[in-house]
Image 1 (cartoon, rainbow, N blue to C red):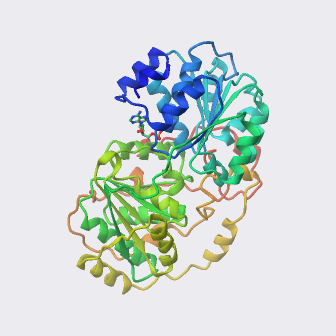
Image 2 (tube, rainbow, N blue to C red; image 1 turned 180 degrees about the horizontal axis):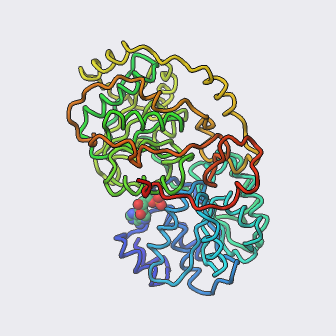
Image 3 (cartoon, rainbow, N blue to C red; image 1 turned 90 degrees about the vertical axis):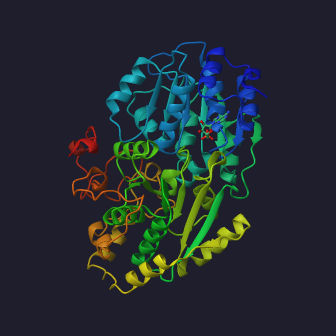
Length: 498
Ligand code: AMP
């Protein structure tokens, strides 16, 4: 099949051609005609199948007639994370380049003012995370009664993040006559219920997910003889040194781990930066852009932050421990070896990770090659002989405090399901600094030593509060934040600080 056969507006076809695509992917071939004909669609598909264009293209087609009114968006796309929302917005710009349509992106970490102005001018497409959308609605700045089409993307991830009550509320505010498209990688009972509740006789389109990992990826496992973090970090460095790394993603299971591993890699001269939900939006966007443009070698990420991100051509994936959910292993290593290219993955498994690793092996149904060499052995020996960092007096107390839930739970869950609530942690310099600074041989993944004030190494303080898509939290105020502190402010661009 070719795109011309799908009945899309010629301007859209032209934009698709300019993107270099000639044939629709299976989900596009099935979903586009169904959406154009006005049917609801339940798409069971994961990222990488072309599902974004499967809803963006027919939406653009339908929007080619009619005009937007002030404060009344014509279509609405809900995304679980800011990055995914921004990625869908990029798709709109790409495929809608030949049409004059207005789009607004409502995500946290960005001032309300600009978003208000866009909504006031009238938008054809509103792309939003549920929390920020509700905030606009509650401020009386938005009317949802003109929405003709709703897309709920990554529905299972929305469920994981506790957004379903928000989605139910949003659906209740939309006209009943709208068209509803729902996309999800899996269909747990809660999502099936949501589909039944808010869709009318949907066409079910299922694109098979790869049960196994791509053959273009060479997988390795390195067994760390110790659970000590110092040893695991030393193993990670030795593995990276053993590879010719052009670019790679280091996956960690917790936000705290992301910070510490990134900091430690920087300290040892690697060009690495963290990405997770506690970092300000401007920093996350900037870091991703640098990684995409080849200006950053190693992206240290949590699963949620990296999920769905379209980063082509990643050479290496490093798992700093197997993920708690074995499906995430497939997602993680699927970041490399894309489009027929070769990729390599390395997973560090310490004794306490063994059970998780066993379920990964069961999930992928294949053996993974052991990776070990003299450099790893030497690093392990070196790190094992160092005294362990003694816990500080307040560590325990801080951990307990960090476990508190926020007032507005449904807005506070970006990444909290997999990641522990972010704690007021011991300073990372002390964590990473407990490692001895060993001299390193020259390596491709290593950068020139960074200055102290280098923007990559800087991380604004955040508390465990508001671990969501709404920007910075208030530190040290407990639950009682005075109103004047909650005023809307622009978040400074960290890149301009130095
Ligand atoms: P998605 O599943 O929407 O995240 O898309 C994954 C990747 O496939 C993105 O890089 C898209 O640009 C790309 N893509 C989307 N549609 C097509 C197509 N018809 N042919 C080739 N690549 C595509």
